[in-house]
Length: 143
Image (cartoon, rainbow, N blue to C red; front, side, top):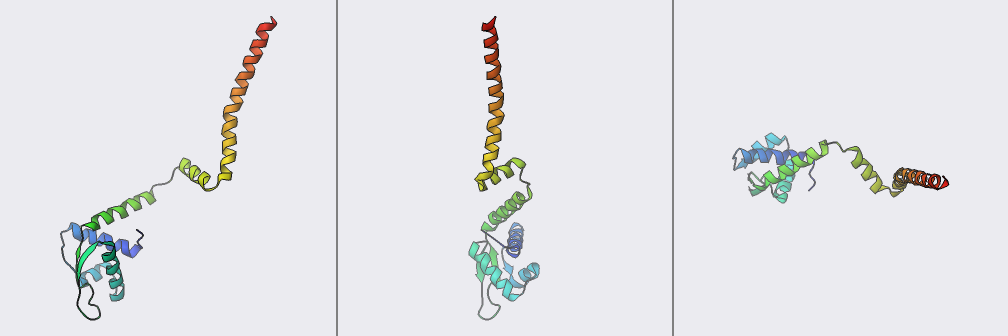
C-alpha cells in the first residue's frame, strides 16, 4: 500500500487517537490536527475509509457534510506498524555485499569479471600446488 506524506500523517494521528481510546473523532478537531481545508479533508478521509483505518463516517447532506464524525478502526494500528517498519527499513543502510549482489542481479555483465577473478583466485593456488607436487615427484625419481 502506497501512501503519501499527508496520508501517513493522517494514519499516525488516527492511530494515536485509537491508542488514547478516542472512539469518535469530529470533523473540526481532525481538520485542525491535520492542518487541511474542507476539500483536502474529504479526499483524505475517503482514502482512510477505503484502506480501512476508519469506520462508520457519519455524514449529513450538503457541502462539508462528509464524515462530520468517524471512528478509528482497530486496523489502523496494523497500518501504523507497517508504516513504522517501512521507515526503519529505509533508514537502515544497505551493506556492501548487498549492494554488490543487487548490482550483479541488475547487470549480469558485471558478474563475469567477478566470476573470473574468483575462479582465478582458486585456480592459481591449486595449479601452483599441483606444479610443486609434480616437481617433487620428478626430483624423487631422479635420485
